[in-house]
Image 1: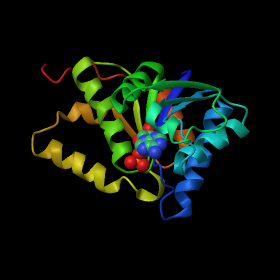
Image 2 (image 1 turned 90 degrees about the vertical axis):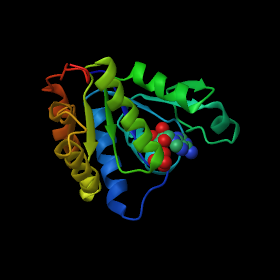
Image 3 (image 1 turned 60 degrees about the horizontal axis):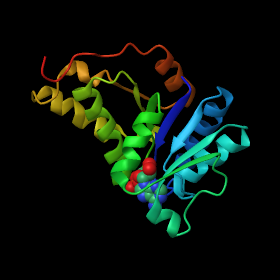
Amino acid sequence: MNRIAVFCGSNQGRSPRYGEGARSLGRALAARGIDLVFGGTGKGLMKIVADAVVEGGGVVHGVIPRSLVDKGQRYAQLTRADVVDTRSLRKRRMAELADAFIAMPGGLGTLEELFEMWVDAQFDGHEKPLGLLNVDGFFGGLLGFIDTMIAEGFLPPQHRSMIVADTDPDRLLDAFEAFAPVTASKWM
Ligand code: AMP
């Protein structure tokens, strides 16, 4: 696994634990020689993950919309930058670049990115694992809702296994290494 896209808040969140989780994820990526692909600005949890990767001697690859570059939000220490015209193109580029995807606590942008990658797996059958870094139980409500979708017959149960959730970045990355892809398409 060479590159992982991390989706996370452009805010830091209320609890310092979110920042601690972001730092430990960044350190774990750098220690394993995995490049960070991310939204490319120096905001919120994104900055904390990227700072930790840079401190660990790793590569930070930003995929950033031109509008945010124009607003001066580009993360100062990007190793590589792809400047794109729209948010949609940013998601496409991150999807191409990354071998796996991790969502950390965040808001609508984070969920939009996570769900686009999950729907891609469902429809196009990409075999890249998705992870939730479940800092402080942040994703408990979402995981419960996913169970509701399955229980109510709207989500095939095998598609739940496309997503791995853990509170610890190293365990999450170990699970990615051991990941057995789910190939069943939604229409099978
Ligand atoms: P949110 O969770 O709503 O804070 O959005 C953060 C996620 O969406 C990140 O993973 C980014 O890729 C993208 N994003 C949204 N807003 C920004 C921003 N101001 N700067 C960089 N990325 C952003």
